[in-house]
Length: 316
Image (cartoon, rainbow, N blue to C red; front, side, top):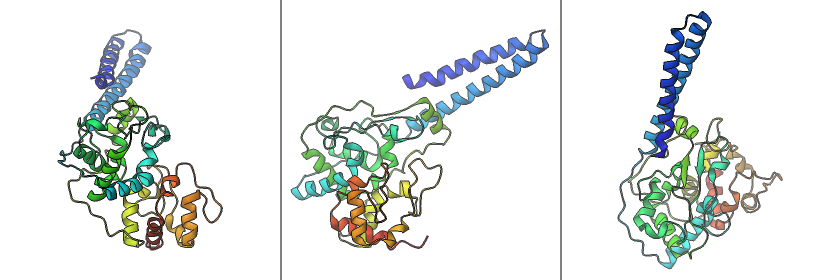
């Protein structure tokens, strides 16, 4: 309801400006007649345009939907172990600021434009998840829609949906095993500002990855290029480093990452050390926006798989 205030105000302002334009046109003073009419009409057009963009943005904000998922995760010891490995190297990048997966980080502060507040949710029992079913969590990870049908904006910009079905279930099993910690997250956690809604309406913000109901599988786990490609697919490397990993392009929402063909000049030990310490073989310190800390928590076998994949990329 409160989201409708901005477009409603814009419409009211546009109406007042249009009325002012008519009043100015009736003036006998030519300066007021032409100058006042022109300025009021221009301002009215701008106000109407803003109202249209806000209305379109609100429509897109509430347009995302995904079918519910009927699922119950057993939560075996192996699932919990696997889920923890994925969480430590991926989910923790946003959802761990102090204690494990207690959320609280506002991703919106990392974006150069003030498009809104996007607070990572507390994924322990102290947060909202106790009232979510396993199917609800699966849908949120795969398609970025919460149990109330709200669009999880930042989640939809990640590649979490490319986790295999089995790995997604493993993450759910691990989350369910956590003790309660931290504070409850604000609801809703994602709140676009008027600027963000207008940019969404203008097509300047993406509407998220496509909704998928397909079965997602992973190749056999091992230090292979094929498995490394799977790890890279959900680790959001392409959001910064470009779809071909040859470097980010100006205008993208995520920070600009360099061409990852550079890894071809590194030895495996140098790549692993880079991920573990944040300093590459040339002594260059990785920027704060590069999530090397969670990546560095990967098992040696997984880091080798990523190394094999990156060193076998097609030439730029």
